[in-house]
Length: 216
Image (cartoon, rainbow, N blue to C red):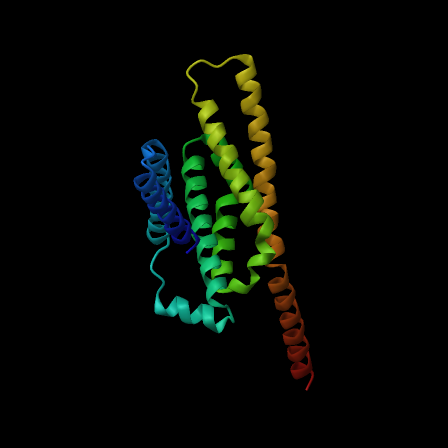
């Protein structure tokens, strides 16, 4: 809406310049071309953004929509959640692609179950969208950093000629990636901690019930 208003304002200025130039006989063609160019740029950027938003997000099924509404989410919250999860899915797929390209990254993933933890976190969030804010560190810091780090690791490791400094950077990067992988695993463990506590309570109640019944 703001883009459309800006374009209309610029178009109005363009019209006034044309009228002023016609009435006074002043050569305003260079200025008019500049203003017209700005209008076209803003219009193009606006359309490109709108088209990208339409193409990026997958179609929301009736079941998903009903699930979000039942969770008490507003229309804006649903849109924000879907955009966030769509971006997260892309990052997880990119991380998987990077890990599969390198034995060192595969070993780190095997040690910390990074991909499994990331995918499990994604499923838990889809199941309970209202808990999105509990995954802030994972969504906005740890996962994006992990993708960036593995991207750079793959790039540096792919250099045809490696110097001593290159090997040192590769080793340093692998250590940081290992630490980040551990944080992602910790993110998931903390995220499901309440579920585990609830299970412990239910198991305790069940054991007490069994003990009481067996004593009768």
